[in-house]
Length: 140
Image 1: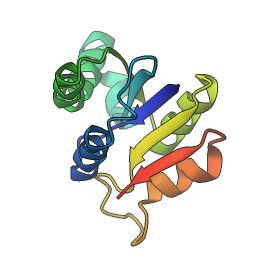
Image 2: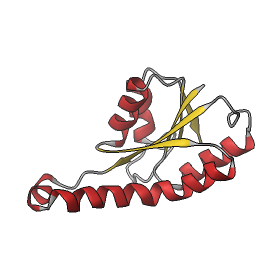
Image 3: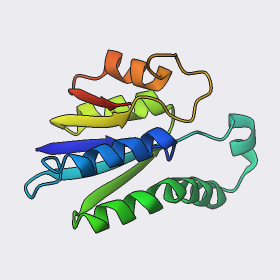
Image 4: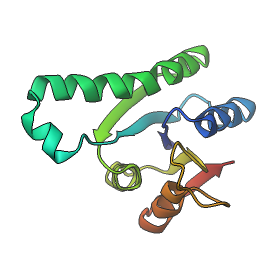
């Protein structure tokens, strides 16, 4: 099974990883994992005056802050994963990555860092489910 794991470093990302660990049927040989993180873009006026290498370094650093504990989790599980970071709206990045990558399943937390989230389900999760053709497993 080809599984996409969407992460943002929030407490719901940690809950989602705990769910995967508790349900070890997901963490079996033969399943391939890709971890995706969407980094919020720097405002256009600021990015226009910044050195491109500096901006890329910033985006890479922001993604690595999120990926570092995820790498440790998959290493403890003896699972190799692919890590993908893209700049843009989280919902759009996640849905596009899931659809273009021909994944069998997308696993993500029900909420993220956004303080504007809905009560039952986060706004990113709502948008992903509305725009993604891949089955989504939301962990609350």
